[in-house]
Image 1 (cartoon, rainbow, N blue to C red):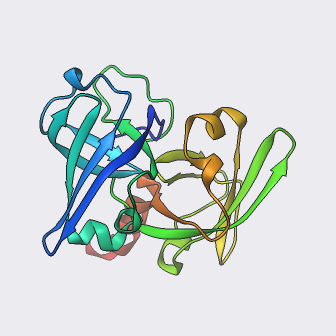
Image 2: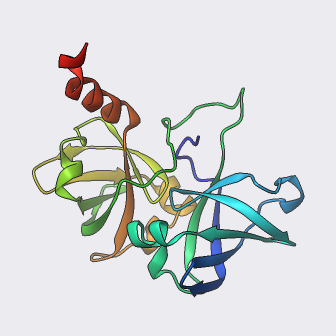
Image 3: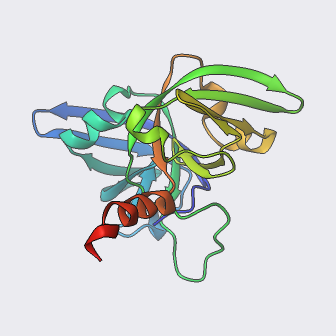
Amino acid sequence: MFTGLISDVGRVAAFERDANGARLVIETAYDVDTIEMGASIALAGACHTVVAKAPRRVSFDSSNETLARTIIGAWTVGARVNLERSLTLGQELGGHIVSGHVDGVGTVVGRSRDGDAWRFQFSAPKPLLRFIAEKGSITVNGVSLTVNGADDEGFHVAIIPHTMAMTTFAGLQVGDPVNLEIDMLARYVKRLLETEDLA
């Protein structure tokens, strides 16, 4: 589990892909000695397992399923990546509960200044739109955000200067794809409504 609060922006140091998937090597400012083998780290919001370590570098295997359903399959060496280590008991929950399971890929369709902040507009896959509500939570590339508004094509958010400085949002441009994870509460409300007549 994660909070959607980015704790490092890493860099893709190596990306080796074959028929079985990909091996990702991410350069990070994390103290690698404190990361256990098998630990979970979210890469742009997609939960991955640590499979190897080296000074300032952590390696992950990404399955074909993950590569097909997220933005990770399009990464190249040098790409900047939002990173978050998994939540531990007793840690402050400052964002919202994030599973690290990407629900779909959206697209940046607008970016403009809004006072000191930036307004980003995103399109979203139609099956996800019903789960995105004004003042609800959403995760974009691993970042916990509040939805400022939503319609039948997508949603928009405000990005404050701190978030711009501490994540990869500063580099996002119109047309760029993004990983989306809907609010877990919305997911369970949908399931409850679907199974209401089974009670």
